[in-house]
Image (tube, rainbow over all chains, first blue to last red; front, side):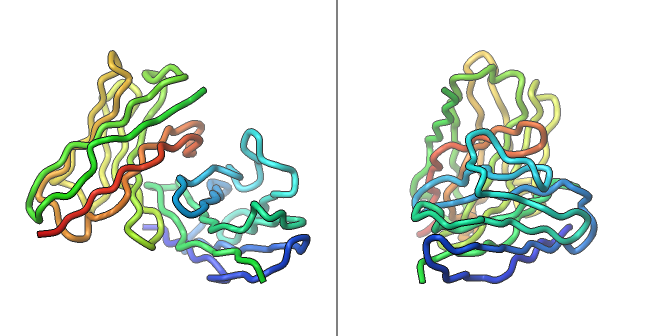
Length: 106
Length: 117
């Protein structure tokens, strides 16, 4: 099983700041990595797929990078609606998710 | 508009059974593989089961293999998850999700399964 590790567990930032979230895989997943956003009481929403492609309707302030075992989700300038939990997911074998990074308001 | 609506959750005793349904609309259901993903209270996301577009292939997480059965009825645009021998650790919100190009592009709102005596 491929294990995903996310850091930090919590990121405390102010609106307008830049957020950098990390996801590391226990073995290479090539570019088969996605990022999801989840707000309280809601289902996850696909943000980024294949490591760097924005899903339909996702604002340009969200970007993804990386390949192999190290991946990054960057939110260039945090909007109030971006405070949420972010999960990475790989699909090299069966799907597995990281434990999540909570982005909260400082 | 793509919609996925789960139902069938509720309170069940340990060892009991429950069948979840996911009604799909707004897309050609028979063209997509579908998955169930769950989330225990306050925890992260866990893949549970998957089924191919025509229902011919099914897959399960080790944690539910032999206890859960995924199926679909493409004539009714509905996905199912039959859950048996339920345990406390199965308690979670269960989401159905559409798989597109290998990723979950649409999710339902989830249905809560509570396992307790």
